[in-house]
Length: 583
Image 1: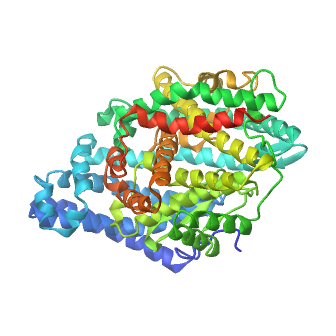
Image 2 (image 1 turned 60 degrees about the vertical axis):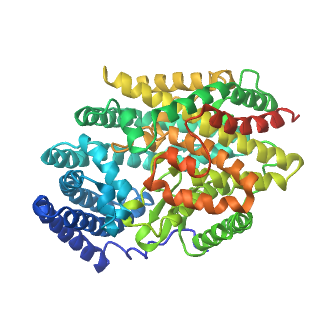
Image 3 (image 1 turned 30 degrees about the vertical axis):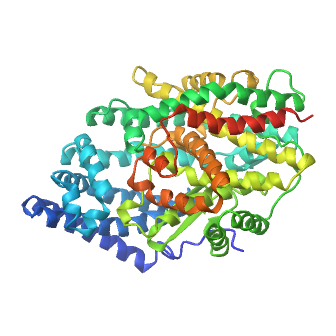
């Protein structure tokens, strides 16, 4: 079985003639669209809408292919200068597209009656939701030349700072027990069954951030300053307001979810204190023990065994999920192991032009890595439901982006628990709770931290020490007495890529949303059985073309009700009670 992904479905390398041919096509389609935009205002409404939508589709089709190849290649080889040069080259072309897209959207926003036009045109009918959203968001567009300048400056501004983060965190040398290791390798040691290894890895990790903290603080400050400035220019109330609008999510939904989370924080602290006691700690759990395994934790998996386990597990949900998972393992969709220069963490990227996905992980053989695979394959399953949609209808908002992935983790956890007992059951139960704690409590701390960065960043430049202090304050508020305040993680802002994006802010609460929404969905599955699956698939397919609240309604869930979120959190609380009865 391949341990690295294959990108040959896109290109066989930067020297593949098809790559340069597509760059030429990208330029030609950009120029054609630019000319079309110039004459669009003089065209009949239907012709204008159809030609602009088709032109944007054609440009993005070739752009996706090129960008997916370079981004995927660069994520597995961040030190490759040729890939960075190509990324910069493509970003410069995209910067030229920005004002063209802006002008096209302004033309499309002038459609008087989208529903009426949809009755006359199939492509307009397919893009009805997009066009309605466009009419609303067009008010935030700047003058075309300003949009072009903002996109161009982002290449050497926010985008460059983001690249610096990726480069520094993937290449920093971590001195661990006399050896130089990658950051990903050392962070994976947090799951080691040996307490001395976990603590030494934690200390080595924190020490490594000291080498790059000042640079990362400059990156963070400048990215957030750019976001804040553009938000103000575009007329958004705040970066959070912009994120919610982009997420197709109401502030009410966010507020009631956070209200429920705050109510249930004591439940998570109860679990953490219990775990601390089981490990022999008196003052709460030290950070380096958050991922310490309990129970029977010596079982490891080869990638072949992980694939077999996952396909068997998900065949009990729906056969097409299991078949897709087998396809992913057999056809080199996944880059498994950590290595020098490879990006940390895990992600899934859709490759819609080939009706596939690609998944990056840093697999270590423990059950947690099997869970990570299930999570990322959930994204791939979501992507698969969109394969019949038109190209511009395949981008779903952040909150529901984590729904299918977390649903998979929930199903995997329940499947494993049913087949375990004794020490193995304790291990699986605790694995679930520590992941739930990350998705709820740690995400809450990250939300608090990013809120504080945006607020305080308006008044001063946040040095590394300021960032550390803000992170510690957020962790204390979220974790409370569940953690030992002497052993927190002041550098969590330095290891999470989600903070370092000039185009995506507050990529934290969507994880809590996805987790709790998935629990609610899974409860529906338990109640309805096979009858739930078609509704679930239909909902996933609809996510790019509806609000998150409308997606909830499709499966009988009211996301604006605090009681829904409480019910999902109560499912976690049941597991906490079972865990606390363990000796």
